Length: 431
Ligand code: C5P
Image 1: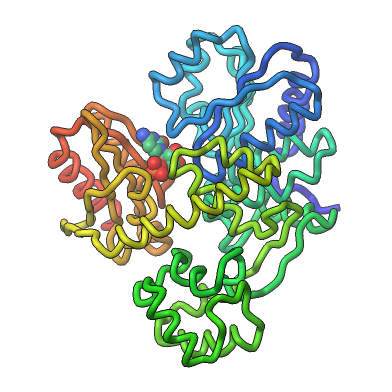
Image 2: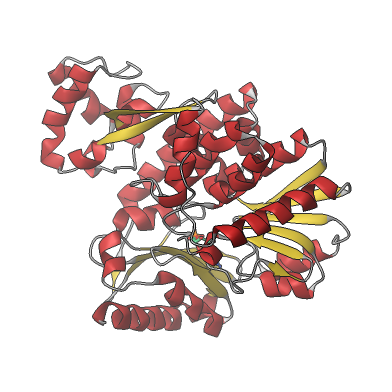
C-alpha cells in the first residue's frame, strides 16, 4: 500500500471522515456547483456519481467563475446543501457570511486555511502541505472523497481532470498516488506513444489540431498530407505504428518539439479511452459552452460522446484559424492581444515565449482577461495570480495560479490595467 503524500495525515483523515459523514447523513437536495473547464467537469461528475451511488438527490450548476453575484444568487436557495468543486476556497468568507451549509472541494489557494468554518467543511490540499497547482487538481480532491466509499473506478476521471489542469508533466505527489491506485486496480494503463495517437481522429487531423504541442508549420491539412505522401503513410489512418511514428519523429526533428511528441499515454476505463483526448474533448465542451454535453460524456452517454467529438473538431478548427490571425502587442514585461471569448486562455498559453501573455475579450461593459506564463517565467518569480488581483483597482476581480490566471475589469480601464500589470510583472521578474 502506498503512503499518501500528505504532511498532516491525521488532520486530513479527520476532515475527510467528517465530509463522508456529512454526505451519509444528509437526506435533502444537494446542489453541486462546479467550474466549466475539464478539471471542473470531471470534479462535478465524480461528485455526482458518488451522490447517485449513495442514493442522494442532486443537481448541478456549472459556472465559468464563482463571482460575488453568483454566490449571492445561490444563497437564495441556501436551504439546500451545496458542494463547491474546483472553486469556493477563495470565496469561503462570503459563502460563510451568507449562511451556506456546504462542502468545498478545491485546490486553489484558500483564503482561510481551516477545514471547518461555520457550517462549511473545506478539503483543500494547501491546508495539508500539498501543492494544489502541481500535485493535485480539484478532480483529485473529489476523488479523495469518492474513494472513501470504495469508488476506486473513478480514479481515472480524476487523472483526466489533472491533465486538463496541466498537472501531468509529470504526475507527482497526490496525483501520482491516485494514478498508482488506478493502475493497481487496473482501471488505467500507461504506454509510451506519439501524442497524435491519443486522438480518435485521422492522423493528419490529429496533427493539424494539436495544440500540445502546437507546431505552427503544421496547421494546414494540405501541408501535412504532402509530408505523409513523402513518408508513405496513409494520412487517413487512425493511429500510426511504432515504425511510422519513428519516421515521423525523424522528419519533425527540425521543429524542435520532439521531446513533447513522445508522451505517456493513459488508457482508461471510459468509452473515450484516452485520458488526454477525453480532457481535450471536455475542454472543447466547456469552451463552446456545452458543459451539459461534457457531463453526459463523463456519464458515458453515446450521443453526448458523438456530440463532444464534433465540438472538439469545431473548436480546434476555429482555434487554429484564430491563432493564424492573432496580433500580439508588446510592452516591456508583458504581451497582450484582444481575442474572442472561449479561446483567449489557450491562445495566450500558446503564444508565451519570454514574456507572459494576456488575452482580452470584450463582454458588454467588461473585459475578461486570461494571462498565461510558462515554467521558466515562474521560476524567475512570475506570479500572475498576484498581477491579476490588480483588477480590483479597476472595477473587477481576479486570481488563479502563478502560471495561469484570469480577471475581469471595467472596459474603460484597459490601458491603466495593462500599465499596472506591466509594472507588477516587471518587479516580479527582477527579484
Ligand atoms: O479564465 P481563465 O481560464 O483565464 O482562468 C485561469 C485561472 O484563473 C482559473 O484557475 C480561474 O479560476 C482563475 N480566475 C480567477 N478569477 C477570475 C478569473 C479567473 O480566480 N476573475
